Image 1 (cartoon, rainbow, N blue to C red):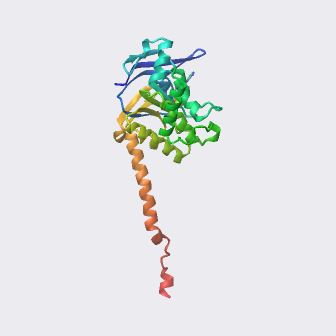
Image 2 (image 1 turned 90 degrees about the vertical axis):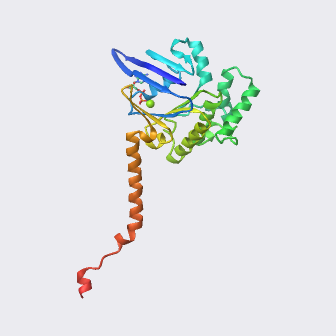
Image 3 (image 1 turned 60 degrees about the vertical axis):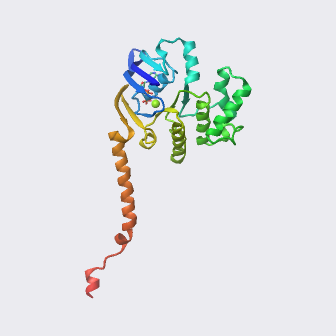
Length: 267
Ligand code: ADP
Ligand code: MG
């Protein structure tokens, strides 16, 4: 198992109120899985991703990442693990606005004390992998949303992380660009990358091979994508709509041809 989460809780204090964003969450993920995390707004998806990404600490519970018991680690060790094992992709890209694509992707390497020359070469290779080999010197505001997200994905990949985490990576993209980004994730998964993506769209989840659904900070269902009841229902409705469209197209001439009226034929 590359990820083992046991009894994870996260309680936020809001004045006197306590919000149980995660309420005893258990989940295991194997290397090379592509998992979609789904659930209604407020179900704890982002909180869970922030825990998996070591961006925030749980209130209680265990999280073993790639053999490392992160719940027992101090801040220094955690930041090393975060830099080495985790690539994070955000809905809002989170690029440095005044740095080129190349500099943005080099940044995590410089944090891990790699020489600038090696970092430049690795960053260039990561940008080539996501199809941006010809945009190295472009700044974020000189690129489309899809290209910005590709830069963010290159940045997530540049340290060859054990897991890639993406929290609604297509949330700010149009549907064509969303499909391109999901195709890129699929391609990375085919190359062996472990990927966990949060989404509320079934067509994005369709790219994953497993769907985990959360409610009130717990796992309420966990199925291979093609066995997930909600996903299957969605697939059927998509197929149904398609069939209706085809029927309407093939049946169109007959429907619009006026049938002769009795009075007309009689005269
Ligand atoms: P999701 O990503 O599924 O929409 P979140 O993980 O963002 O859900 O939020 C889960 C719950 O925790 C929500 O009720 C939310 O209001 C609450 N929450 C999230 N972050 C914080 C925070 N920093 N402080 C207080 N409450 C929070
Ligand atoms: Mg969220």
